[in-house]
Each structure stands twice: as C-alpha cells, then as structure tokens.
Length: 248
Ligand code: NAD
Image (tube, rainbow, N blue to C red; front, side, top):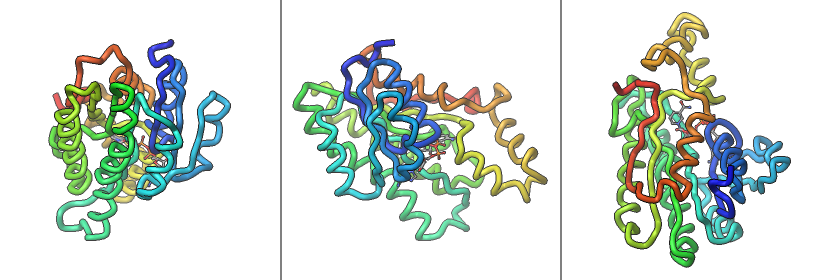
C-alpha cells in the first residue's frame, strides 16, 4: 500500500471491469481517485471506498474537459474506455468505424489534451492507455475494427511519450489478452449460437490463452498501478502485453 500516496488519479470507464478494478487498486495504494463512467449507476459502491465518482461520457469533449478541470492537476490518467466490435472488413459499417475510433482513440486525444497542462504545471504525470494484445501486436479473428483502433492507441501512446519525455510526463499502453469482465460475457453471448452454446463460446476464449484461463480485471489493474506509480519512472512509450501467453 502507499505506492500512489498523494497522487491525483482519474479513470474513464470505471464502472465495471478493468476500469473499476484499477480505480479500486489506485485507492488501495493511497491515490486520491476520480472514477468516471458514462453509466452513473455502475459507479455505485465506489464512494464507500473513498473514491470520488462522476458521470462522464468519454465521447463528450466539453464534459471531458470540464471533468478534468474540476479534478485539478492530475498525476495519473487512466484511459480505459473502449468498445469491442466483433467484425471483419466486410461486416464493419461506417457507423461502427466512427463509433470505435471515437471512443477507443479520439476520446484519448481529448482526455490527454485536457490533462497535459496540469501535469506540465506540476512537473509531470503518468498516462496509461488501454490498448489490447489484439492491435499492432497481434491479429485476432473477427476483430477487424477493434484491432485497428487499438493499434492506433499504441501509436498515440508513443507519440505522446515522445513529445513529453523531457517534461516528466510518461505515457504507456497496456495490451491485455482476454479478461473476464462483464462485456466479455456479452461477446460470449453473441457468439453462443455459432459456437454451439454459451459454454463452448466461453471455452473458445479460454482456449486462446496459453495458460488455459482468462485474466482477472485485478491482474490487469496491477500492471496499471505499476505504470501509474513512480516505481516505473524509467518506463515510457511502451505497449506492455499481459496476455497469459496468447502471443507466445
Ligand atoms: P467493460 O467493457 O465490461 O465495461 C466498459 C465500461 O465502459 C462500462 O462501465 C461502460 O458503462 C463504460 N462505458 C461505455 N461507453 C462509455 C463512454 N462513452 N464513456 C464512458 N464510459 C463508457 O470493461 P472491460 O472489458 O474491462 O474493458 C475496458 C477496456 O479494456 C476497453 O477499452 C477494452 O477494449 C479493453 N480490453 C478489454 C479486454 C477484455 O477481454 N475484457 C481485453 C483487452 C482490452
């Protein structure tokens, strides 16, 4: 405990899954945390852990700027918001494309842009962006749009890291394999008919992981804490894979 003592931390999509686990882990390490999500109901329960909560749609530029200004200078920004389309280049629609690039990539531009002045003003900060092993690291079946956007996250991450490397601001990306979160349940349900049932659809995700299991959200949050905390201060611009051996 105490690795983020006195650090002001801001998390998008903190209502469930990896974002929620990270907000809780930041708080457990002494961070002063603002947890945001489009769905305010999902943030319930975090206040009892000493976490400030705020409804925030990461697609709303003005609301993002206002929320980050209200939070005060940030030490840590964790951009977790993202959506997984299951599609190929043939089934991807223009609407899917615009939505995924908006949420998975463009929203990071806006949050980081809003956070930079405060970070510069206090001599630095750590930005952690949610990418995926499915990105420029690895292709995955039926993840055309998702992999494309998450590759863009890695490029964005390296660009920000480069421009601020001498100014104390670090920027890294985390690249998980499959993580057991509520939205994975939705993807399993969507695949069930084709896979021959829910169990078979879940097993197909498990089978990809060389370790024979899915990650927990807490395991990914532990990497996010490391990248957020001063102990990783020599690490910037990296896309760190955490995937149970999927890319081995
Ligand atoms: P999830 O998909 O189960 O939950 C997503 C959360 O985001 C929800 O609380 C939802 O209300 C919120 N949200 C949705 N749209 C939003 C918006 N416009 N603004 C703010 N919040 C919004 O969570 P997860 O599976 O942990 O995924 C989180 C991130 O991790 C995503 O970027 C995802 O691509 C990435 N990721 C997930 C996995 C996985 O296997 N679950 C693997 C690699 C990367």
